[in-house]
Image (cartoon, rainbow, N blue to C red; front, side, top):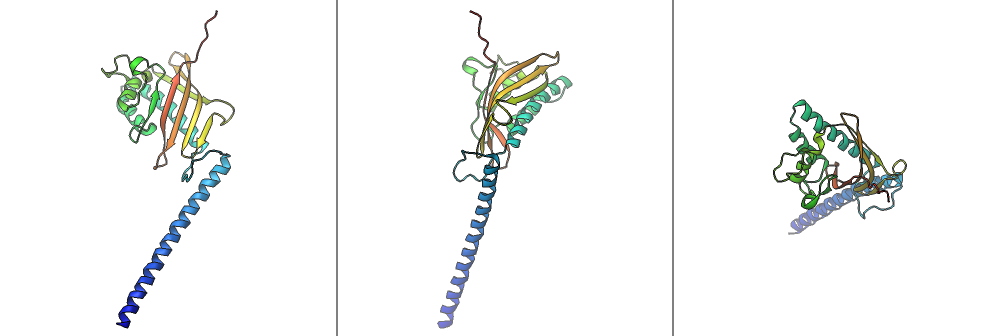
Length: 217
């Protein structure tokens, strides 16, 4: 009986030690993660970051996501001109660059209006970019112009036009698109990006509009 009691006590102690060790390992990982996040916060001079944030977007990631959007817009039109599967590519862009497959997206395109102003599902967004959807008869395909060049510029100097709040970043500025005749059009652009668990930035808000032109009077 004494031996049995000692054995049980020994097993209990061993289990408690293992549990404590596991707890300490978890705390160590969380501490390291917090230190890494804090370093990014300090390096970027961020002020507003959600409590308990385990990841922080960087300015480089935001700029890369904006440039990728511009490049994708141009490629959709190029594929159409070359006889490629531009619709499949555009669909993939909406999965990669937007949050449609993971949650909500608020999208107000430049040339959308009326009851179809907002394209908060992938079907409506795809119709806007490539047309061909009878449910969206006014969409001719914005990306099919084709645009041969696209560039962006955030408001202010350097990264002043970017706000970062932990795993969410907001940008405001302009996008310029150029057609094959060399005509350049500028639109006002606001994006909100969210960093997913896979580390990728995806658009959760996209607001685009033509600049206001006051009438002479």
